[in-house]
Length: 247
Ligand code: ADP
Ligand code: MG
Image (cartoon, rainbow, N blue to C red; front, side, top):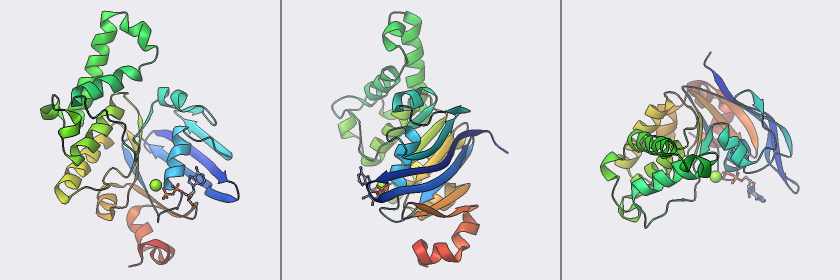
């Protein structure tokens, strides 16, 4: 069994009378990709927000790298090794690709000010930014203005900015949204690479990507998990076919 990095136990999030996430449990392991699918409104983004600490759960427990982080703020959870991308971009469009990654590496460095007072701190930030640039496949675009690269490359840049914080766990909310076939293929290749050394959670509508990448597949409907397990078995599940895949 691969190393468990994140565990959610019966996480629930209520908005008034609506249980957007209803007693969801899942495990993320190093070197594995866990895909979460479900129709719009199923609770996938809310679940992502619970795992990153952007939303506190109504009930349930969240354990990251062996520590109970239930109710901890997102900065604390990020410091313990969780990185996420957002559906809404946080790229600075007038800055270069490199400047964006460099800023992400610096902004999320704990005690950045103290580090920056030391030359070796700056060197360490630059090294992390360089690794993220390379890992995300953007080396050739380093000096381009972020607003002028393609949509697909901007999504790669968002992932690079997350990687610059050196997370162990990566949560990606629909990274293939709005991509053409060639761009999607490049992103799938990148995600395949990122599986090595990271625990990944992928929320995605693109079923080709999901079945190409996922080691585990969870299906959510109305806030609840209706099936979870090995992707081929989940796909064959009659309840899943009826509720979601509809094929
Ligand atoms: P998905 O990402 O699967 O499309 P969401 O997690 O965005 O689903 O939403 C799940 C449900 O929770 C939806 O019914 C949505 O309207 C509701 N919801 C999400 N965020 C909030 C919020 N901040 N306040 C009230 N309801 C919300
Ligand atoms: Mg969503």
